[in-house]
Image (cartoon, rainbow, N blue to C red; front, side):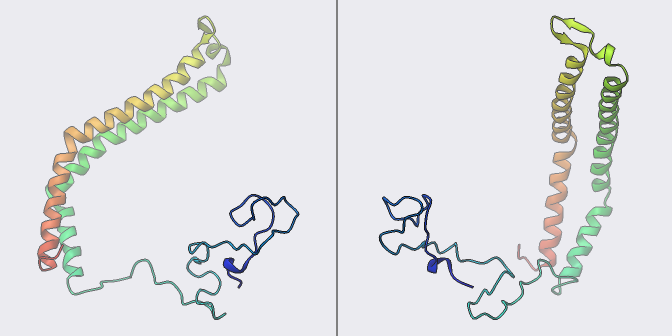
Length: 183
């Protein structure tokens, strides 16, 4: 595989062109594109070591199974937190908000689409000037999306964030003890 530093850049207005040359004309001198990152090959592409031999495979992104003596204990710490009443309360608060909100929003959206396709006369009914019911319902979709995002953020801030932060702190304390004080 030929390095980009060995390639001559001819034509166009790139960084490898000699000043004052037009497309189709040979450059006055041998100008090469010198970019150290240009030659960096992605993992597993081409011959990474320049010898023509295939490059060594990239290591796996994550290992399967425990990697050290404390990993099983760390997993047990996470399971302990997951089974705690505080964690279950945070999850139930989340579900009590999200499930009805998603159902209501999807019903509103499907109602809008169904009405637009089955009752075009109703959606075309003028409300004020050139504004009709369909336009107002479409803008209502945007408004309801922003209102739902605001309500979710408010609910999370008031009902879940403090408890979730305490759970995170507890989990870090448990895993720190398992790892012998290392963070």
